[in-house]
Image (cartoon, rainbow, N blue to C red; front, top):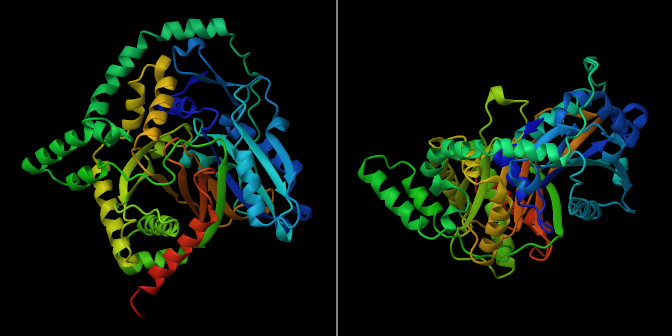
Length: 488
């Protein structure tokens, strides 16, 4: 068995009847390149069965420790049933993007069955021009963005003909039976003496990076502490990033989407030109990520202006970052950190908005690079497992009813620049579907693929009346930047 890290376990701990810890990807495929011109449940199931031995997390089942006295474990499921995880459905005619988005929102809004490996794959027919969608749900406790990409590259091929996959090793072993509660209770009791040691090991990292933890700025006294810390850095001559530290610990303004979330979601998806984003990056001397975040800031600004709800102060976004090293590829789980950064939603000029985004992200990255890579893992390890779930849910609930520590999540995940194929069908687009929690009812995740950037917008159904408007705003923000470029 393999024990979850404290950070992995937090994605389980925050779950409730309204908050889900899984993520998803919506892939749109052209079956015309596949054998027989089809992509159906049988073809997908055959592909998964052929490559399942290369993807151990897809066979892992969650094993809880009774009374929650220790972190849970992953164990290979001896009763694994691939047919349970792969499902098929179809859209009613005409099968347009909005019907697909509604189907995704409904499927995504159902929790995963914890008595089985925490993933599902839906083959969705009925799209225009004979296209087929694959919606893959998997729990965030199993993968982060980078390890999720590893699963995708294992399942997909660079050519329609596929590739030769080595067969599983025939070692004669089978999955061990799932331990009963009594055995897990004994294991948990044996692990109790290790918990204080785990907390002590995490203490230096947690204290050193406390003011940078997501949500820390909402706790009493932390903004004052951060101002004192920033002033001390300036006095001592080490002031890089201090200005951003003071800004990012300022309390964000409350918006329409910063209350407790419901059990229902809205989803919208769309694409913009990566070539256009790269051209703007070259013109203004920024990065692709700067341009993407600036576009998101412009989209959110337009959405709030249309509802007469734009705050005077800039919104604050959480931007996940991978801290996974090269030698940690294939280790699965989560190796991530977070930057809490203001985004210039208060800036009407697109050029100045991009420049401010660039400066804020650059300073935040400089400060972030000085933080321990294990900050989030160590901070969560400081909380005893027996109270972690209750603490996580109560903290999020309380902050959502007062003044949340951030307004939204913006994530930009780089993807492949060349075509990929599933059972011979070409992947045309890959739209992410991500997590929202109480107090943070909007998530904008972007994945690049070939010459495009694919947006997935997830919002709380009660707080976000129209998720598609964000895509219109993103297209408008990109055009503003293109129009503001210097003449050739």
